[in-house]
Image (cartoon, rainbow, N blue to C red; front, side):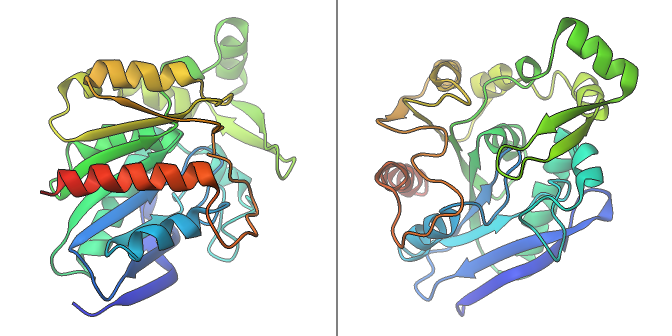
Length: 277
């Protein structure tokens, strides 16, 4: 097929809501498209993700990255969380619906392709939950993924207060916004608890899995990667001298990937290339 580069196009995901999406198909397309899923308080244009895209497209892979519909961004501004109401209404089910919509969106633009999911942080959970059920997905890679959804929720009196008020506030360290989070997030998990059990998913997953974590991750500890690796009976790829975002930051003004993120891309590509043989 002919090459294409779509930037800030739109797709309709959960609840019919519109959000931003990018897709690049290189000239030497190998028929494989990587779909990148950002994490909590993330967005497709965070930090060095554009350089991750370039890393893979120059090797012949297609690359798609998108904003989940309820990440707090808008069509006009997909970066600075101008829609806190939408952010507050987000759930795991909505992000899973977004990913399915993205796959369908690609299907309408690319005739023949196989997909490979890369999920960062919370996005790793979305990749694990969804990837096993989407036929075109051939492999799943997690970067600094959480190992449990349930353990990320508040407990005890903090949980009871959240239930009572219906909302809690989450501080965004970059924008300094106090973003709302509805109890609907917790209720959605309770309704789908068995389907969102990452331990069970890893134990039963029939697709190739790549689990990677930064050794110095203080946001999602290394033990999360160790558990995912153990449950899936796969090697844990530890990136030395790497934090939760693999030495990147936002904004990323350098023209090259940080060393840790480059090493991660190289290992992930090696895994994907082996998965498609």
